[in-house]
Amino acid sequence: TPIRILICGGGNGAHTISALASSRPNVEVNVLTLFADEALRWKTALGDDHIVIKAHYSDGTQGEIRGKPRLITNDPAEAMKDVDVVFFVVPAFAHKQYFEAIQNYINNDTIIVGMPGQAGFEFQALSSMKRPGHSAILSLDSMPWACRIVEFGRNVEILGFKDILGPSVIAGTGNYKLPPLQYVQRILGEKPNLQPVDNYLAVSLMADACVHPPMMYGRWKDWDGTPLSEKPLFYQGVDEIQEDLLSKVSDEIVATAKAIQQQRPELDMSTVIHLFDWYKKYYPDQISDKSSLRSCMVTNKAYNGLVYPMKSVDGGFVPDFGYRYTSEDIPFGLVVMKGIAECAGVKTPTMDIIIEWAQKKLGKEYIVGSTLSGRDVGSSRAPQAFGFKTLHDLCSVL
Ligand code: NAI
Image (cartoon, rainbow, N blue to C red; front, side, top):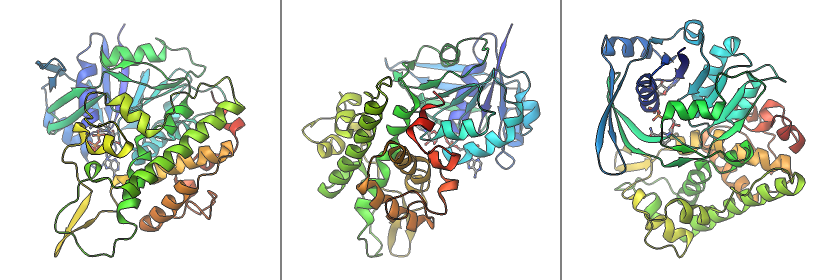
């Protein structure tokens, strides 16, 4: 019998997984997009045709993958009918909207996948389900591929497959058609290979979001408002001040993991490592000078030419503080890490300074002094926003 999955979203990742999953034998794919008229636009653009993926494989060869979802809709009830697995493939700020739309149709046997989850996905997911006795929650630590839409609704390109991902799995209590991890691997195919990490806290603490805010703060904290004549290099322009900030934030994250490990020896937090070690581990061939954190970033080929998010104004460019490096990576990133640190009883003076600065740019208040007690905590994905206040609370869902 066929298995049926739901893809939530309509962007690059949603196009890619919709086509890829539909190309597999005995897999039926529904798509739900709630964004404006995207469902109708997608359905109309595709007509009776298949979505075509142009895939670039790591051995240099290229291939074509074709797949057609059975349904593209903006109706949650129709979308969720007989679905075993739901993939959330939208930026983190949109997760809540999808959970609210489908929560009445999620049961204990549904598998929920954040692709990627981003920090705090589990808290959002759990709060949308009836606890205790909830379904499985998988959080992928990144998108399985670098991918982009070439022609909306019809053509998409996989620029590269990740070799390995380290998802977290909260097994839940459901009666699944296939074990959750095996199910997702079957949909993705051979690559990336899913090598689960021990627990969701370890994934949340290692999210990419710990890089962008310290970079933004370090670069712009003393900026006087004068437009720049060109967009400065992002990673390749790291200076000593930013390096120091990144390193200190990383120290606070590692200290949080150590504190959790000490209080809960049964958890394995060893995948939470300092950013310097992370670069050496994950970009072994792309970095030409591995002598320091700064040199790892400046000489990383994967980062060639990437610039700061900037807006054009009269006289040049000004930083875009509404870009996801702050608007997402604070409420769905650093604030979540801060919240976990608070549950573990770890002080985070450097994170606090960065959150304090960024929340002003965003017109929000998450932190007051050194505690997460601002009026906007509830709209962040900090554990505290969902009633998790202690390490005991965080572990109660494992
Ligand atoms: P995308 O930028 O293509 O997503 C756009 C989609 O998000 C839209 O089509 C719509 O469905 C939804 N959306 C946009 N604005 C919305 C709004 N105001 N309200 C409701 N829904 C809205 O995103 P993509 O590329 O699919 O990536 C998803 C996540 O994965 C992002 O967080 C991205 O940073 C991350 N990621 C993406 C990679 C890639 O290669 N595409 C690689 C690594 C991470």
